[in-house]
Image 1 (spheres, each protein chain N blue to C red):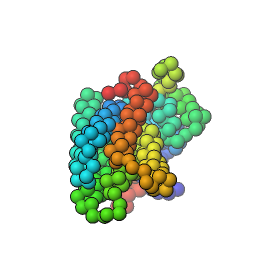
Image 2 (image 1 turned 135 degrees about the vertical axis):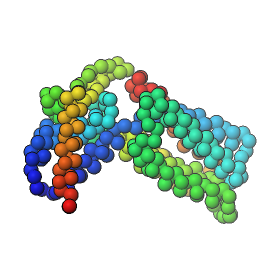
Image 3 (image 1 turned 30 degrees about the vertical axis):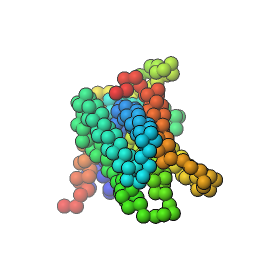
Length: 102
Length: 208
């Protein structure tokens, strides 16, 4: 087995929780903090930590606003995040192809 | 390392992406539509005394057909407005989750209203509970690909139908209540309440 594609996998995205967040956001223009937390069954603290890590990597943008006088935090993928996610998927596809019996 | 991990990861990503998009935007109007038609149908049934099994079945199955057609139009309009495909993979999954329990409820409804052979059990009175239970199961199954509230809404149906049935069988077996009242509550009032909840809690821009 050629380990090259595996070694190229983006470590920031590869973590289970962050991969789930990226996957959800890849299919939606934006999602609120609550929607992500409920859909992924994460705790507030856990989700905040992952969001911060993705934000620091430049993959995720966080916007804060108000809805019905209550604070609303929404997340969306940045262009860099979308590109990194696509590359991550391509590498996974390559690994799958590589593991497939000839 | 499990050699299939990459494939499993891809499958998980696919599922999460499908769960991320769905009818969320069109749910409130669909709930209002179902609620209004539910209340109107119950009123019509009570006023016209459509209590015989066939009339009852025809009225409520017809009403369900109108709601399904209306929901179809709302979802299609929403998809067109957002430049999204109507029959997308997530839409298909929701439909696949909804169909078995709804079909089971419809088949039982047809059998009970077309062939009401029992002298002991009032099938017309039993149907609202069965339909509410099946509908609750359908919502819960579809809720996997929809906002979390839909699953809870499914549980509301299962809980209220079970509770009301238990109350009627154990506590008040002699209570004389029209099945239209039960249908109006389950499929009218509950839909209106959930529609109102969605309307108040959804983001303004998401309202259809």
